[in-house]
Length: 335
Image (cartoon, rainbow, N blue to C red; front, top):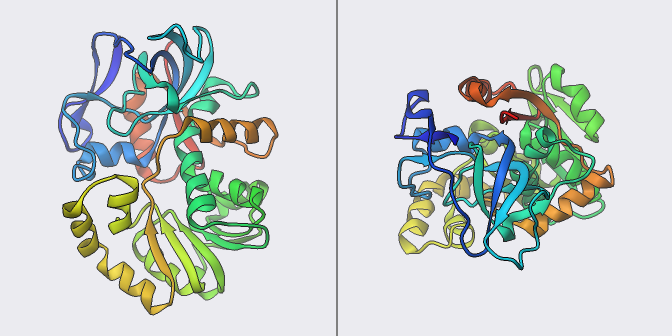
């Protein structure tokens, strides 16, 4: 079968399309014929070696963190999924494998696709929507009347985050370019800051929470806009000690490393009387099933920026790394 394989760490030259043997499912696993797979910033960060501290892969390894496809086979006759079922999944962090004709997925990470979606749209749902759900519902604990600021609302995670925040009953303020304004307003954003002409910190105040998708200076300035006792959750900043313990289930060494690396951010948070949390999301079949229900109820809409043929996955990566996509980028496998 054809697979997009990481052979080393670095730039685009570290990846290659090649023929590899088709995998076989083990206990608790299913074999999926992949129809489409979503791209995410974690993919090029993995390729560049920026996640080697937390994700220790044995190279070469097939890349890809989310997929949509059809069940080909399962290891157990008692599986809840049968050949022919249309499914989607966020791949296990320690294995990846979505950028291939076939992939092995643990059953507990799999959910049935919403009937209303085709494979291309479904492939862009798992990682970004689970990230947004876990950040907004579990970490920020949004509820009706909450006020949340989401930086970068027109991106892959941002488009889901706006909709999930509105589903939770929150008032949403976000940033977007003039090109992205219509999109984020259609998805439910209440206030849109044009980041090309306005500084969000001059216009946003007294938020209950912030979901940071940008990092850098945007993250540092986000602490100013949260009211005392609030919380800033980031997926683009620096991991802090709770990331090592809660998200990665690692010990004292990584906890100490993240404590030192995040000191400046945590100090800035303390100065403003708020807390800082870096979220490393976890795959979950049951949560993905819940999100599929929101899609069926028309409360959640996947936004697809562009679909590339699998043979052009290198171009898909280039488009992803440009940072200009509105919504998700997907690669489509050959029929």
